[in-house]
Length: 250
Image 1 (cartoon, rainbow, N blue to C red):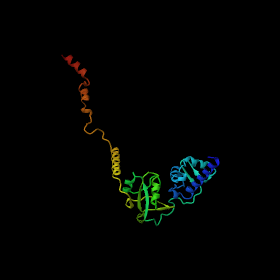
Image 2: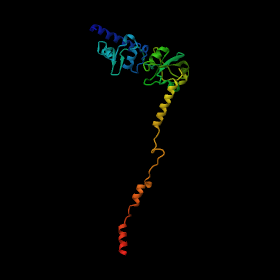
Image 3: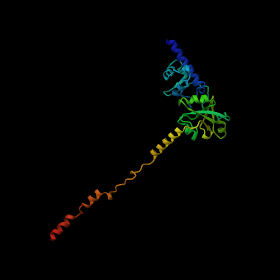
Image 4: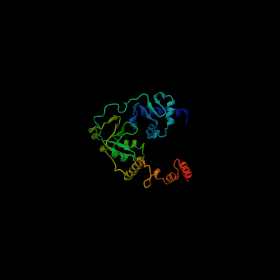
């Protein structure tokens, strides 16, 4: 590949990143943080879903950051943002007064039983990310699990009960959704059993351990035969003097 061709590829990647980070992050299922940054890890997962950019690695992005378009971006070791952004920070506005009747979210298979029991809560991010499009939700889920579980969220019913939703382009964000508004596939019995075993093991580890093993007894100093023998064989103080007195009196 000639230098000119390579430079054109770097510039093309720069323009694509500017679109993703500065114009439509929601189109790629990305939700920047409160300062507008996206982690390199999440960015790469998103852009590699596009066949044209499937071969892009972090080294390619670093090359952009050292090239002619480096002024378009700000980055550190972990994350990157566009300098010029045409979108408002996620969750910065008022909660939505209307939401679709149904939204979708995808979770890891391992998290499925927990979500159905306790509700859907954000993990490392401040919001749960939802979509009106089932396939987009599945796409986001596949970034964390090859076969995620897609759940249905009764959004309008939950909003009427006080659950907050924020809009971010074509995505919806929520601080958390109670289990009563979540529907999905039946939880795999094997997952339930595995979760029960993990909980039981955790409880056993956390339980206080006794000072002695059941069925044994503590050896008290007063009942120690060895100690008793030592005491019985010990002469009382003054025994020599008493012995001499006896001999003198004979």
